[in-house]
Amino acid sequence: MGNTSETTMTTEQRKILAVMLVPMFMSLLSVSIVNVILPDMQRSIGASNSAIQWVLSGYTLAFGVLLVAAGRAGDLFGRGRLFVIGVSVFALGSLISGLSPDPLVLNIARVVMGLGSGLLSPQGVGMLQQYFHGKVRGRAFGMFGTIVGVSVGIGPVLGGGLIAVLGEEWGWRSAFLINVPIALAAIILGRLWLPKSAWVGTGTESDSHGRRRADFDPVGLVLLGVGTLLVMLPFLERSAGAWIYALVPVGVAVVWLWVRWENRYSRRGGSPMVDMQLFKTRSFAYGASLTSMYFVGMPGIWVIVALYLQNGLGFPALHAGLVGLPSALLSAIAAQAAGRVVLTFGRKMVVLGVGIGLTGVVASALLVLAHESWGVSIWWLLLTLGITGLGQGMAISPNQTLTLAEVPVDYAGSSGGVMQTGQRVGTAIGIAIVTAVFFVVQPMAGYGAAIVAGFGFIALVIVFAGVIGLVDLARGRAKDRQDGQPVRS
Figure (cartoon, rainbow, N blue to C red):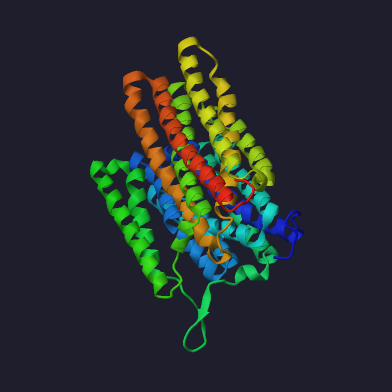
């Protein structure tokens, strides 16, 4: 497909997108939909607060820990192969989750779902790198950004709607069971529509007997998996007490050992999980840092908005979910539009998107203050959070396109896994901090002050993300001038 036009999407490329994006949407939806169905789920199976927390944590941990290793496995053994395996595992976990008789089975099933998501997600990013080039790649990542935005916004609405239509018992169960037929369709279409090259790895080499083998780097796999687990776990299992945060520096130390190992492995002639030379590439290093920082902030918005509307103002789950719908739609539209022009405007578009997102967060905080003080309708959040979604659509998918632009195809899956791991770790840390801020302020000053404090933390994080983008933009311009090129980025 390397000879295809870089401005017009072919029929084969459209089929690849259809196969990739629907299961990726499904896996991301399984994160946002759970927040709304948790209370009904808890009552239905008699789960304690700590047990029900693992419905969220188990999925997130399994998802995050597996991303880089799964991406590298796709690079080596064939992205189509790992994608179908991942979708199959996800479908099995969804089926067991929907039929779970008790909290233990449900939590195990959610871990299985997380493993499936971790397997399939980096294959999608890898295939976008492998089969799309030039402006078509920007459009493809724009569609990926649409999937991200819509999955976050539509999840609470869909979850609330299923419970309203099917009732408490089958409402939450159908939120999982609906994944099964979609996954089966994705498996069938994957076998029919993915090109033959998707089933063949790109990272094999010959051994001393002339046989082809894959250099998978098992030591690197274990080190990164353990390090990621230790860093994420304290932010997802906060009921264990303050001591659990001692695992964070241990996890950081393990990740540092992983970096040392990867460099040594490469010097000895092996193929590491992640080529550390990628981090010397400006576009990848700054882009991965920006997206990780951004995800420390933005996902926490929907957690504290739900807490404020449902616990503070008494909104039903469906109404609280509807508040995020304009944000999802505007994020989808902006991602599509940005994907078409990202190569023209470069990093400037990302910085502008971050600035618009920051404006939406600040406006939302001011609106809550106006509601608490003067009774201004809280439904204006539809507008202010919509601005946030618009900024997200302009920032996330263009940043992904620019970040991976100079990554070799042989490392497309693992580099995409690195970015997604940064997003998952950032989300876990950010939600833990923003909810801690919310619950510290709420007893002292009420729900209004609590959400404003949460918005303040999120705004600060987004400012840092914007600074990373501005530094990257400035260095890119300096490099263009030094090379005698037109200033483009």
